[in-house]
Length: 257
Image 1 (cartoon, rainbow, N blue to C red):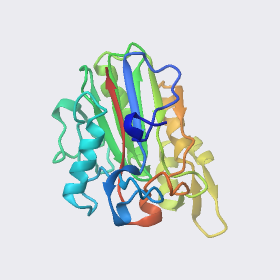
Image 2: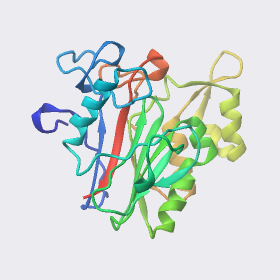
Image 3: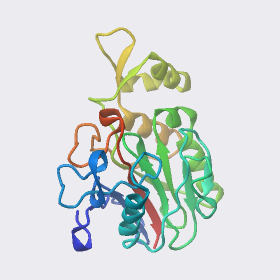
């Protein structure tokens, strides 16, 4: 879906998102970044890389964030994502703080996570009073980032919670080793259903969307949307670290309007 001035965003198909809550996720194009950070094949617009830690020109990242900010009530909060389970309030967030999720109860305060294969999960309570964004790669999922985020939201008064899963690496491309399989089976043997064994010894294809749905349900969140993209396969739309190694980052964002 396109925004004003043809700047592209994904606007989630999220049926029970409260009317007072807004959410978007960016594509790789619509900005000014060049080279490996470009908007390939949308070269006319350049890349909308929003990550300041990936080797892109700082002035390009700043310009891209300025482009994105024009569509938001306030500049988003960013964090230094470390594949853990730490959750912080968005008004405390900055890029020097290690965390992988944030929440907010304040109008106009934008929660954001950056990804390029890892799973971004946006959450809101059905009353529209608490929102959150979580960066959920396999390490974060295994260590409990979604559970921690839901606990933080409930501590702020959230009751029923709904979630949307943004673009991540698809199950046909996410090859992992036995260490990843073991990390999830240690949490629950039922999680083994989201791993497809490959002919090579101790290799699997992992379904990160299925893993997240299961873990959300275990925490009482069963209203879950999204999960239809593959960042690895859809090179025209998304950055992918596993595919390209040096690449940009997309943002998934949520706020109370």
